[in-house]
Image 1 (cartoon, rainbow, N blue to C red):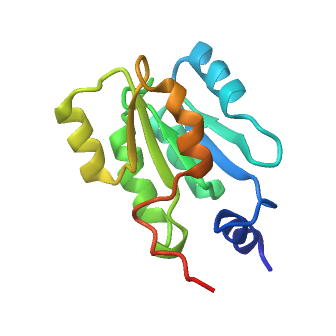
Image 2 (image 1 turned 45 degrees about the vertical axis):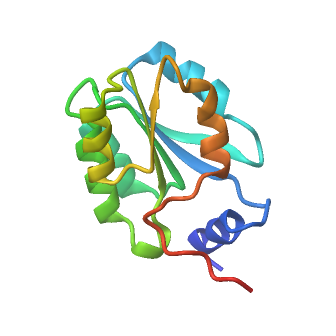
Image 3 (image 1 turned 90 degrees about the vertical axis):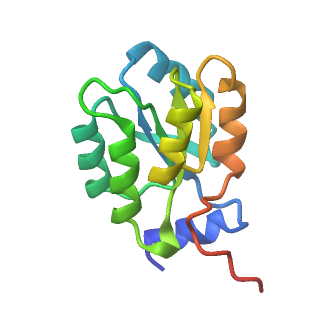
Length: 149
């Protein structure tokens, strides 16, 4: 069984696989806070970080992730473009959970993110307490339903 199969099997119910997170955030202070918030050995881990659109796209090509936590305004580029690219890079049966975490929580920005392929849209100031539960338990609406056994 390859790594993707092991992760996928764990994602679909088993507790043996750790969910791999790509954190795309340009604030070093917030990145450290989010790594602390999202780190739970055996369940979830931030395995890579990016501060720009180009860096995020490089990370997506180098490795696979179960979850992307994406800021919209990045040091260079934007998170919406990263979301679109991620949806194209991953096969239908391995779509990652994509959670937008932003300070730009307007209806317009939210709708734009959902149209690009985001699963969740959270306000950094108001919704950050919800982030870990979404990352641990959430499933991408873009992935096909899990087969029942």
